[in-house]
Length: 145
Image (cartoon, rainbow, N blue to C red):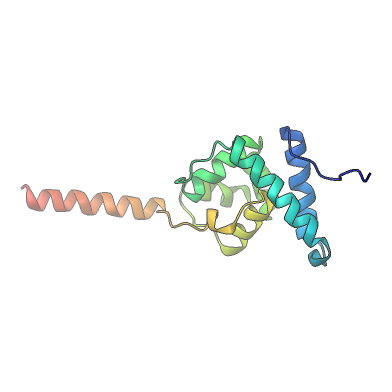
């Protein structure tokens, strides 16, 4: 009887190992040759995520990234290295001062074995939030002088 290479994920170490293997396959020169393994790892990782996830489905992309960083014990420095950007740029993303580029979204989705859509939801940047609050305050002053 053939021994299975991949099994149901039982712990975080195994989960991280499978995520790393999936990333290597996806980033290889010819990921098509790993199609079956990629599909299987994706199912196993999704199953583990569904049972162990602390991620709310309504989390905006920045909240999602913060949760994933905490779950994976990563710091802004680690994300900066992953994305090949400065720590300051990551800090601006985490503080809602900069949006996520398509490349950032792609790399995060690959690293955390998630769909890109999870990081591609609309959310307000800090400047937009401040302008809305100021507009609301002006409207309130105009209506209630």
